[in-house]
Amino acid sequence: MIGETATTRRRKSLRRLDEVLGGDPVIDVDPAEVIRADRDERDARDEDRANGHG
Image (cartoon, rainbow, N blue to C red; front, side, top):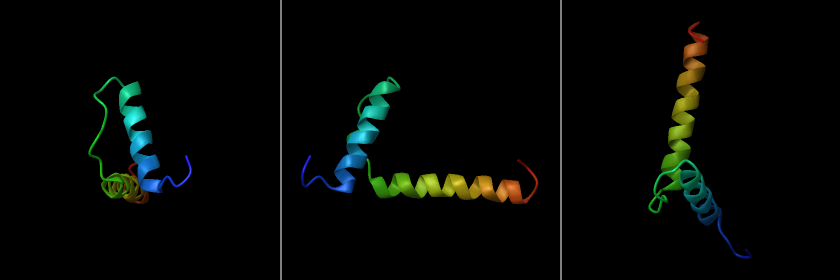
């Protein structure tokens, strides 16, 4: 779609993912929160690996 923002694309993607996984469509998702959660999870994995736990 012309003029679609990254935020709109991310919300559509999350909505489709949730529907595929069998949940209700995700409507009010802040993409910044998702990005932060992904980054936090990745940082935690990296820290575990650095400490010899993975």
